[in-house]
Image (spheres, rainbow, N blue to C red):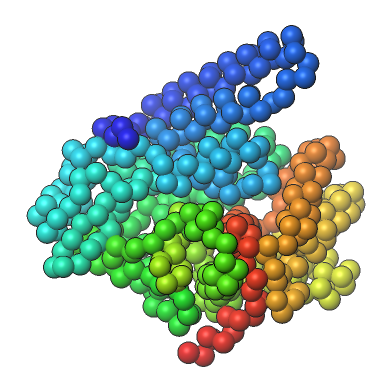
Amino acid sequence: MKTIDYIPTNKLQRASKLVKTGVKVGGNYAKYYGKKAFNSELTREELDDDNAEDIYDGLKSLKGSALKVAQMLSMEKNILPKAYVEKFSLSQFSVPPLSAALVRKTFKKYLDKYPEELYDTFTTQSINAASIGQVHQATKDGKKLAVKIQYPGVADSISSDLALVKPIASRMFNLKGKDKEKYFKEVEDKLLEETDYILEVNQSQEITEKCSVIPNLKFPKYYPEWSSERIITMDWMVGEHLSEFTARNTDQNSADKIGQALWDFYMYQMHHLKQVHADPHPGNFLVDKDQNLIAIDFGCIKKVPHEFYTPYFELAEPENINNPDIFMTKMFELEILRKDDSPEEIKFFSELFHEMLSLFTKPFHLEDFDFSDERFFAQIADLSDKYSKDTQLRKMNGNRGSKHFLYINRTFFGLYNLMHDLGAKIKVNNYENYLNK
């Protein structure tokens, strides 16, 4: 794969790249409607394919937060057309890596040594390249290591990147008023945390130590002495990406074993640690030859404050969802309903979230849950489709919910998708067995 010697880092350069991408997308629409004039049966598939290709190509050259958005969108299987999901999912593994010269320059800047001075061996060509950094292999004192290197300028471009996408996001989600800034601030803060590799090493060591009580779950060891704010050194873990495993696996017992480990990992963090790995995409998990699940990236950790955790999980109880007084109280506590809402808005959003929560919390209503149940995921897809076409919803202020919903919902959507890909059948409260260990 072709390597990158330079990444646009200032606001003007990055805006120019996005404008060029927008021009290409506009051309795709013109081409599509030109063909449509002569062929009324033409579908949007060709348009979606062309747009997905051009948008992804534009984002991957920018890397950083721009590419992170594509990575997050690739998980929203029920929202985007298939072409976008397939193309954007490449952002999890397949983007052009940095050149060897740029890698050496990064080492010299942040560890004051070149890689060959730190390790016994170091592969100049990256093994994996993703949104914020790329991974190289190294050895030291007989240990095989993974070395993650952050792309230059990523941290510095986050604020300007988000400023560029704010108008688009506001239109897409109908966000109105000053209150919408809390959502953009939450995203900006989390992305900035993801660029702080010293923080990531600390988080990784803390969470992996506490979650080591969970069976069939493994983590790499981290080496602070060979890490810095832009470089992380950890054990090289051998296994295949979770998506590769799910694509070939036909054994239900294996799916259940790995799925249970994944579910317990998330429930233990959420309910016991009150902080959670909030980036559950297949590129962050491996499966080894003994069918252990390996979690390899802890850059995005969402802390779950008590004032959000309590009402959020109280609404996972059917008796609370179906009690009108309790339900309304929790709607206000979670900022889904607002004091300045009109009676029409209160009625509309109460009914919408009652329908959504009654469906999304189904796994928590049972002792065992089968994530291979196509009916459950078809209902989610139908609900997404229903509200995406709702003209009444588009007219209302989309500022709904605490800022904490952004990453908690992302976590559960990602987890549900991974569990569905595995087709796992699990015990919902199994994590409780490890709370006192």
